View 1: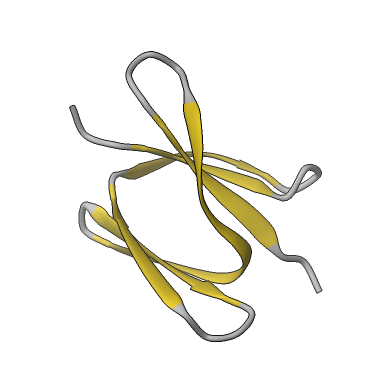
View 2 (view 1 turned 90 degrees about the horizontal axis):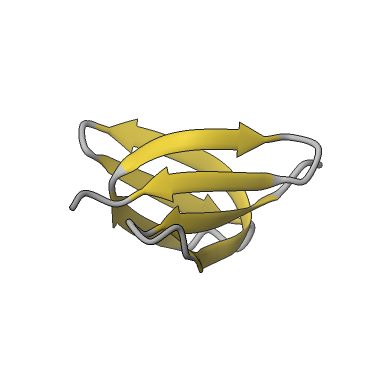
Length: 64
């Protein structure tokens, strides 16, 4: 099973951890719904800018 950590990127380049052990990502317009391995949902407003399958990281850029 491949689980990922999701981070938001701020305008200054700083990354903030949003959710770990993410098993599902659903993009709904300008929001991203993350579901972790326990079935908990976290909703983030922004755009996915990078998915790194080797490091199991997903980056979401938040709107300014």
